[in-house]
Image (tube, rainbow, N blue to C red; front, side, top):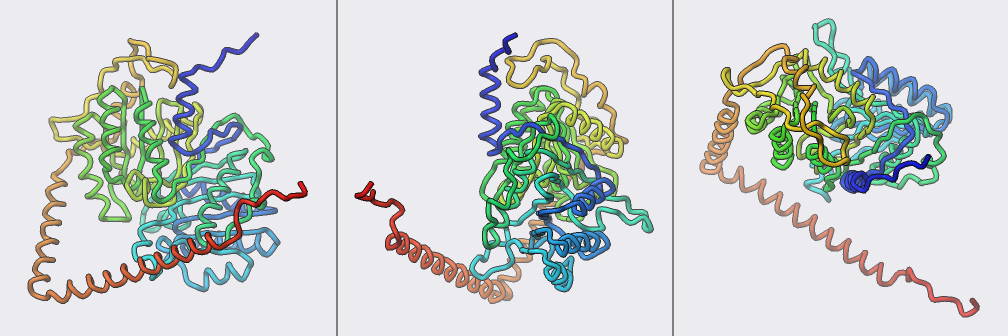
Length: 483
């Protein structure tokens, strides 16, 4: 029997996803969803202990506590056993969480350690860009892409009745691990001597491990791959789009994408923390609720200690797990790493997890009298890229999930509080300028001198590079007369 030819529309959709994300669709993988520290940390440690050839470890926060010490001990043990262990930590994320002795002990054991983007006089604004990725790759066999950092905060504090942080990661086996390794190389190369390609696993040398297709989306500064992919998913979703985010700050183009999906009848939900480890984020996050709620997006706040997961699931067939938050820093400024999963079984599992999370959340409504009403479905969802959906069926998600939250709370006047705080800050700044002008003038003058010196040094380096390019050996050799 002759297989049907692929649909031209499906080909266009596949090409759009690849170009938008900058990531190929990689078939033949096994994916295991790991929830919270209780499932993630033991799986990471087991993989590290099994390493025979190489360990690539990258994380935003690594702290010198019971969790960090456990990982340091295992990494050091494998390095002493001859395993090539490389570790990247972000300077800002890990600047105060561990002592110099902690890092020195790892290096003395043979771990190759690099720090991403420490302060530099040559880059006054360089601190803005961070390595926010969280990943592990072991022997080209097992990979982890996750939202968890290495800290006891993810364990909670039973003695003080503080629940563990809610977070999500995935374990990967199969050819996709080779692309996780390449994402590590990208940041390693940005911090010093490049990692030789021959030390990475070849994708075609890794045995198939399952039937799940994934994309490894490696976000980088000044690129918008994950942002563009998330927008494309918001545009493509026909039935559901359920999002969990730790540090949501409304970004107008993305908010518009969510509003457009909700107005078109898609069940769009956003789950965020009610309390956070970054107090400034909460008011900024809540200030962005109103335009979402007015368009029909349902917003929920987690009632536990902290929800740190960054996940999305759409139409019960597509999912994303990783490090990217729904804010400008993740979309544009940082190195991020996510797995986009195109598999119905994984997506359904994440939908079940999402509904369980909603049971421990409070829905935010506009007021006691104005709540988000599920939009009556206009169309029957059909597979992406298969043409226009068919008319006439009840949307399952809105029917079963309408009362999933444990309660509701009316949205307060968050915007007014932020406006008053900004007004007060500007008034205080103006007062300082009037009373003590030198307090403002001197720092501005120092910053101006610093920036000007930096630009002159860069201009000099660029001129030297251009001169070297002109005087160096030609890249094109003349053909030999003897040939």
